[in-house]
Structures are given as C-alpha cells and as structure tokens.
Amino acid sequence: MGRMHKDTDSMRHAIGAQIADPFFAEGLFDALPDVVFFVKDVGGRYVVVNQTLVQRCGQRHKSALIGRTPAEVFAHPFGQTYLAQDMAVLAGDADIEDQLELHLYPNRDPGWCLTRKTALRDAQGRIIGLTGISRDLAMADKKNPAYRKVAAAVNVIHEQYGQPLQLPELARIANMSVAQIERYFLRIFHLTPRQMIIQTRVDAASRMLNGDASVADIAQACGYGDHSAFTRQFKATTGLTPSQYRQVAGRKGEV
Image (cartoon, rainbow, N blue to C red; front, top):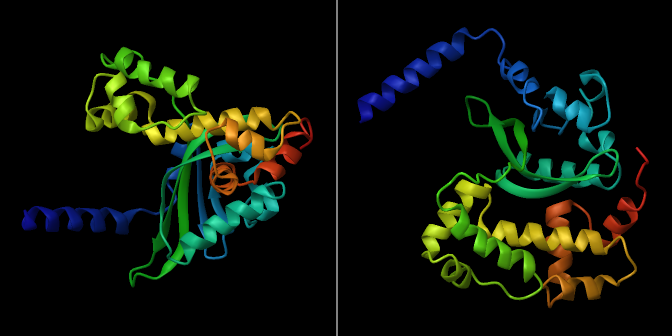
C-alpha cells in the first residue's frame, strides 16, 4: 500500500513539473455554465476566473475581475461578505466544503448553489492563495429507485417547514433508517436533509421579506423560535441579514 502511494506521488510530481500552465483548468471551467471557478491571491484578488463568473457579475470580459477583490466586484454588502469569507480561508481558519448559499444575480433573481473554497499552499506549506468553485444546485435525480420514498419526506419539509423537523421522523416517513435517508438525499437531491430544510426555510423567508411582515414574525413562520438564530442562519446562507436582504432584493432591476 505504501509503495503504491509513493508511486502515485511520483507520477503526480512528474507530470506537475512538466505542465507549462498551472491554470490549465481555466479553459475546462469556461465550458461549464453551471459552475463558477476562481483562483485568488493572498489579498483575495482574482487571479483566474471562468466565463460563468464573469457573466454572473454582469461583465463581458475577464479583465473586469482580474486583480480586484469581491468587495470591488459585487454590490454592497455581498462583496464584503465574500471577501471576509475568503480572508478566513486565507488565514488558515478552515476550508469551506459544500456550503449552501443563496446568491442574487445582477438582475436580483435568486439562485441556490453549493460553494467550496480551499487554501493553496507552496512547497513549505505556506498559504499563497485560494481556489474555489460554486456549483448551481443540480436537479433531482427522479430516476433513482428510492426517489418516491424520499420524496414523501421532502413533501413534509415543504409543507411543514415552519414546524420542528427531526431527521428520525423524516426517516420514518420515508420508511428508511437515518443513515439511508441521508445517503439517498445526497444521491437524489445533492443536499443533506438539514440543507434542504434550510433551503426551504430561507426560500420562504426571502419571499416573505418582499412583503410587510416583521422579521420576527417571518422568523416564527419559518420555524425559528429564536429571532437571532434566524438572522444568523439567514446571513450564513445569503451573506445578508434579513433586513439587508429586504432592502437589496427590493431594488430589482438595478445592476
């Protein structure tokens, strides 16, 4: 086993030393319209971006992003939030793995994605930048044999998101064990049950924020007995507090 690992490392190092352009993946990611790809330096400035990110930022050319931070590219306060997230990764706090996020595009239409960011290190282990992707949430795999059973639990989430939802109860509804329902949720919806509950609640809250209901009432209606817990979850998912989202989403049509 150790010999195999050593041989694999040797092969990686050998081909890595021969690659003329370390950013060869940029062209591959340009061909993926549902994936945002980027590389940033230690200051959080874009070094490499794909065309999807350029379009999502309402720009035409990559040069509009290169050398700039998210705070200089995205509208306030989104850019500041993304930059703070980057700086935490660059400080070595922790990589980000499949964080569920709700983004607002230039026309203010919302879109769900899963974001990953990881620090880039040199041969001595020093952090020299970061790279990341943000994948649009994929459509459900309705051909999976377990889809109908899991869909019963999903219907409960959609209909009762304002109530306490426990994983063992969702598993019982789907006639599965907790381990099974978690596994099939990932296979079919590309989300954990907890992520789907969050998505459903934040979706509902974002719609309600277009109305006149108070943030406290919206929190209660979306299953959060604690106003502050709702605000923390909403900001972690959207990058904005509910009040900020209400203000930004209301400016539909502005770029």
